[in-house]
Image 1: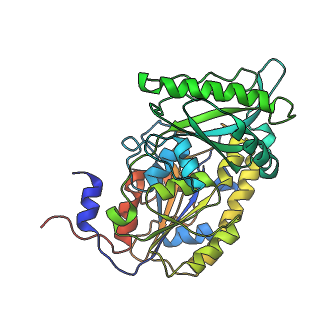
Image 2 (image 1 turned 90 degrees about the vertical axis):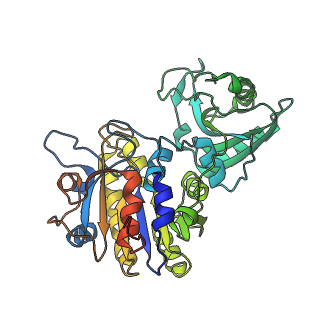
Length: 401
């Protein structure tokens, strides 16, 4: 039986509240053998207090040994099998900024980058160019014209923007042009199947014209294209869990993913403190709240251990305001691990903490990778986290006679 068939049958409506706080890339590694991870190094009195009340373990985002992107990582947390439901990053990014994708559209998440005189990439994110600098550059690409295709270009945030191709005969199975390295040339867009040949050709022409438009820029003098994707078809939280769900996220991609699973995107917060304020304001309107915190991921990707520690402490500081609302279930987790040691997403299971009045606490009084290894939740696939959330909230009936 499909898991969502089960949740449709067993869902129970009540007035309980569930908060899922996702610290992107939360899991880490020690920088030296025998040392502590970022989470274990950080001073986290509030997480430790919750650990004393709650139960912890390690969630496996996709399967053991698989390092996921943010899309699959979040889908698992939301209770969707990330191997069954595959969403390209472009669709997430486009939906996240409110772009209404139509059937047959192909969306691409693009990153401004810096190339040298030989065309090799020297900075994959154009120095993390500010939104104020990048937005006019993205808008300048709207002058690109390609016969037979309607083109939409939308600024997103910092070095990111979205391109959507609309026309006949387009499909989203095209490989990324970001080589994930510096000192090398960007890749050509290559179709992975016959149905995507036209999309690859359109992308190639778009890149050619973009390079000409951007050539005089010092930082953002080119861009890469990632996550070519059509709009996916996903059942909603209301349908499969009986929950009115809200997403409070700063970055568009995560708002997009939440929107695709039927969450309402609420508030216009730009800081964690503002996100918690939105949570308070919307508390009576929803049953489930997804709060997304980005900076534990970006600091890990930068290889900045100390900064990831600081960002983890910032996350900890927001918890008293959340617990003051007395949610029946509070979950703190990540969509994947991003150890500063590796400077990338990794395959390591993610520390996960669940607190409720009926969660059967384990003996741990701190929250970190080492304690999570022997925590009461054990190691489990992230797609089952929503079942635990629902049951702890009294929202799941009994299965079978």
